[in-house]
Length: 233
Ligand SMILES: *[C@@H]1O[C@H](CO)[C@@H](O)[C@H](O)[C@H]1NC(C)=O
Image 1 (cartoon, rainbow, N blue to C red):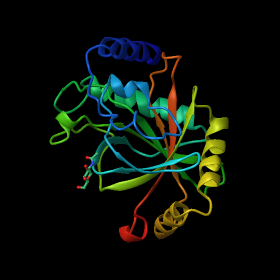
Image 2: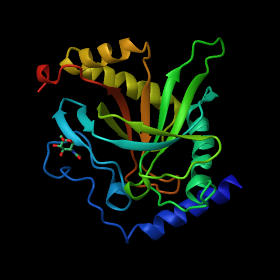
Image 3: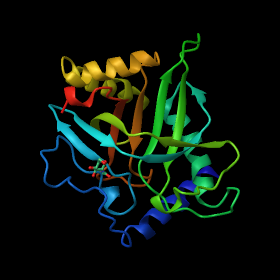
């Protein structure tokens, strides 16, 4: 069943690949980026954002308003396994397994919010989310086991990496992002922001289906708020 679902997704993505040029990844070509723009975003809808700052090995983005359909927290020792479990739930959702039996266009990225758990089993808690297309944001169909998240404007410190996400890479990439931010105003803002809710979590954003082998782009996001904007602009 799972393999069939993923097959359908790859078919869906290839069907979509020539029909959508939403151009939402704007600004990417004329900035000094440390990474590349996820190619998926020229084919399918991605949430739009503004690049606030480009640093050495990271960039700072502001997402004004994003709407996500999210799983319940999934406890697992593996981000890859938890993401697969959550993704299949979300894939059913966009295929019409929701209260309105409505089909929804695929978007990117699929994000995995990671919260370290303080239990004894080295498990973490993962919430997997699908970016709701603008068309559906006013009235996204509810579904059992899923909940809607409407994010307030939020900043993200972002590091890109390529290939297939492996559990062994994720911690390293997050540590590399943290190291590249060390000593910057952004690091201070993240610490202040995370300090407030005692979380040291991060988010992994994946832009490609499992059947795409080239130009795979993933990102680590550290999300934060800025209390006093003027200090940073
Ligand atoms: C985000 O909001 C700001 C302030 O209202 C606006 O200038 C900017 O164009 C918006 N960015 C996007 C990507 O919608």
